Image (cartoon, rainbow, N blue to C red):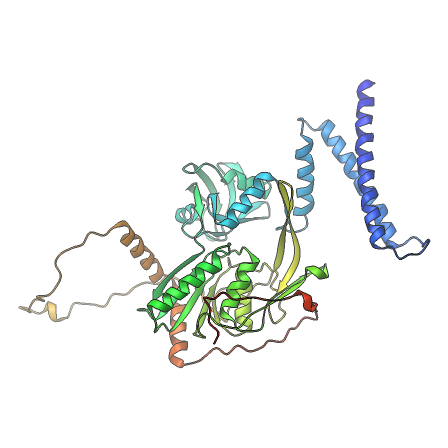
Length: 479
C-alpha cells in the first residue's frame, strides 16, 4: 500500500509540474494574442491550448510509467533528453537535440579539427547513408563513397540506433579501427575497415592545370576559414600565372557548413545582385543577402563542378552563380538540401532546429529538387590509349643516339610521390577534365560573363531592414 501511495505521489508531482508548464505556455500564448477585450468567446486558439494541456498530461503519464515499469532503471535526464530529441527528429532529418558531447563535437567540426572517420552521414530508412567522405580522410582512403549505406558498425546492427548513437559508435581514439558493413548500388556487400584519426579539414586546395592556363580551386567544406583560404589561393594563382585563362571551382562532395561563408564565397565572384534569401515563419528572421562591387577573378571564365553530394551551402553558391550567369555548372544534380538549421545553445546543450528555407536569386527553392547543372557530365573512366611507337626514328637500324638524354635518376621524396599520385588521379577525373576544357573553350571563344539581374518568381517580400550587403575584404578589387 505504501508503494502504491509513493507511486501516486510521484505521479501527482509529475502532473503538477506538467500543468505548471502548460499554464506558462497558455499564459504566453494568451498574452501574445491579448486584444484588450474584457471577455471573448472560445476560439480556435483556446482549443489548441486545451490540446496542449491534454498532450502534456499524456507525456507526464508516459514518463511516470516508463520510469516505474521499464525493465531497467533509467535516469530522468536520459528520458527527458530522449523525449526532446524524438520531438525534433520526427520533424525532419536535420533537427535534433545535442547533448553536451554532441555540442562540443559540432563546435570542433566548424572550427576545422575533430576526431573520427571523416564522413558526413544522415539517417535513411533505418540505416546510415553516407552523404560524402571528406577529402583525404580515413574513410576516403579506405574506399567509402558517397551514397554508401552503412548497416553494421563493428558487427552491431545500425537499425534501431539513433543517428547520434551510430555516430558515437564510429568515433573513438585515433589509431583504433572500426569495421563498417556497407551496401553499395550494383555491388556485393562490403566490409571496410577504417582506422580512426584526428580529422583536420583543409577547406581549400588549389593548383594550376593545363600548363598554367587554368586555376583549380577545390572547396571541400564551409568552415570559418573557407573564404580566407580561397581568396589567398586565388590571389597566389593569379600572381604566379598572370596569363591564367580562367578558373574551375570544385564543389563535389561538399556537404555545406556555415551560411556566412557561403555568402562570402558567392559574393567573391559577383559584383551586384541578390545572393540568397532566407525565408522564415518569423519575419524578423528572414533575410536577403546582396553582393557588393568587385569580382575576385576580374571577370575571367568560371566553371563550377557539382555532384549528388554537393549540398546546402555548396548549393547556395552554385545556385547564385548559375542564376546570375556568372559560371557554367557541370557535373550531376546536387543533393537538394534547401533548409536552414539554427543552433540554439541551452547551457551545455543545444537545439539544432530547422528555422527557414533558402531561395536562389531567381526565387528557386532547391529543397528536395537540387541544382541541375547546365551541362550534365557523369563520372566516367578514362582509358589512356598509347600511340604505337613501332615505327619511329629510334627504331631504325643504326639510328643515332640522343647525346643529351639524361641518364641520372633522382630519388623521389614522399611529397613528390604524393603529388604524382594526385596528378594521376586528376588525369582520370573525367568531370574535372571536361571542366578544364570548358574554361579553355570559353577563353578561346572570347565570351565574357556579364552579370544580368534576375527576376524572382516567388511572391515573398522582406523588409529593407533585413537586406544585407556583404562587405568585401581589401583582397578584392573593384572593376
